[in-house]
Amino acid sequence: LNELTGNGDGTDDCDDSDTSIYPGAEEVPDGIDNDCDGEIDNGFDEYYCPPSFIVYGTQKWSSTNACNITYRDGTAIPQVADPTEWSNITTGAWCYYENDPTKPKLYNWYAIMGIHDSDPNTPNKEFAPEGWHLPNDEEWTTFVNYLIENGYNFDGTTTGNKIAKAISSTTGWDNSTVLGAPGNEQSSNNSSGFNAYPEGSRSRLGPFGQPGTGKRVIFWSSSVGSSFTNCCAVAYSLYGSNTHLGSSDYYKKYGFSVRFVKD
Image (cartoon, rainbow, N blue to C red):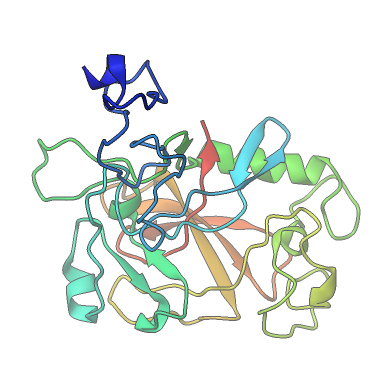
């Protein structure tokens, strides 16, 4: 009835194609105006941050890191501060770097894949906001190749992976003498607008990174590793003294940063 007639007080239904969206419906953090009051995810600012995007060829990437602490349906992702608990968990978890609320959020791979409990028969949840998804290894490769081919290497060449400066933030990196590295002449970084900030990481054993803040940032992909797939997944890393964006297999229990790609 609500879907057909609104709220009974003359208020228009804002989406006649979806019976769960109508005036007076419960608002949930999903990037949609569920209750038709003109505000998206009102009341959930602390829990959910719909991303803005930047276009790279055929792809639209989020221009900021994930910061949500719920899955798409509003289910909480546990915050895990204790290092022993972090090292033992095989379901989704997040933390602040160094457990400091003024610092960025990091996620284990189980969180980004929506593995919210230990029952293998339970469907996974969605981590990405509505209309977005986690980039897989192939999508990361497409991103890297686009930047190389379109002149984002620090030396202007269109071969070889030298895109680190172009995708790194203009502040926050430890100083480096390596030409073309994010820590070298930081004011000339970020010509691509990707704005990767050196947020550090969390070890699979629980301690926070070495190297840490100022030295690197690592982003998860949704792809499992090419070897030891039960333990590992592919992630992409930027180091302040390297000129490239590299990829490697990491244990799924690591805590890394996350970006999204538009569906």
